[in-house]
Image 1 (cartoon, helix red, strand yellow):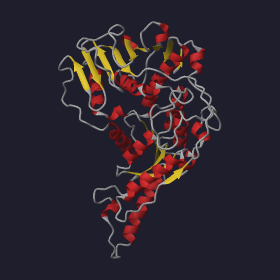
Image 2: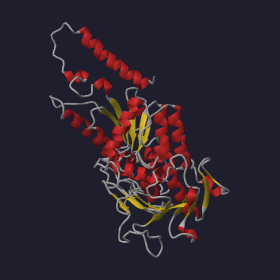
Image 3: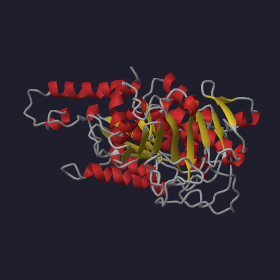
Image 4: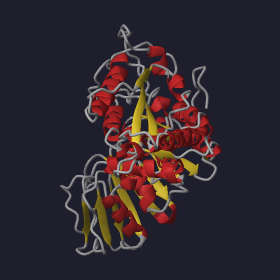
Length: 452
């Protein structure tokens, strides 16, 4: 039994023992204290800490504040405005639900190690930039916390594998924020593809092409209230520039992803969602493509992956171009590919899936099944799936190993773009075949004291 489980058990026993000890005293104890009114007793709630409360982190925090089975008890951010805002939001939300309208139970931290040292925190939500995902997840696993990490799982291939190994070694429930795994339309689409409704799959299209680059921006003064050294963390030292981080209320989700030190551009920030759908639909959760070909070679019009059984995956810019791409029967060339979704094309037709309940197919009737997708909220479902998995100790919908494989597909595309050549990939050994330069790009040095 983990120390966090022991902590919850002690609190639970305390409440029961206290109730028994005062049985003869005429006190009125609200039934909600023991969960008898259908609510979740405080002793049974999962205590959450948030590491990174920028735009994505704030969204996650608002979501978890609405779940009775969770309690937000700590927020950590190297941006003072953001961590204080996270504390204020949590305390005001909980205060509004109390008869007296007061609540002071959320602490703030600048350094994630201080938050992770708390024995009373059961799990953490990591919504930092990609640069921190690997180190933060490994540290959280070592500290005995269950983990929800935003996509993409890592900045490098080696970090992704280290996160899987650490989560397994310490027996943690680790969910990756690829929320389509908990969403009805994607579940139905991938089930139909795997069931052979399309016949043999020939090609899959996704959108959001482009990776990051080396950049050299002018030096700007570090804003008061920002710990720039901790913001950089494992990344190489570079001077502050406002394009990397806007102090205070965040205007964008990932303003820094254009810089290779911090992320992989569109392929890791956005297309990773689509790659996850492709891996899932093709039944490749334990494998992946065996070759990736960048457009610089001239062999294909856009970034192309080769999967077993002659299946191609191509990353296109928004729409299929009849002059460059195969247009399946029944497809309107003016149709834009769904963001974060995929178009599966097979011998018997096609299925196009996206968010907010989008699901289309050809020929008519190809989507027919016993149930229709409901209008579910993907993030909410994904959160609740993780909380349920924490209680049962079962694997969540997008377990860290699944997220690892899907994120590696993004990294393969980045490395192919950076080298400018076709690369052979061994998905079992997770190494490039016969290319030393590409293999070196699977990892990057981490600035001390950070290690994985």
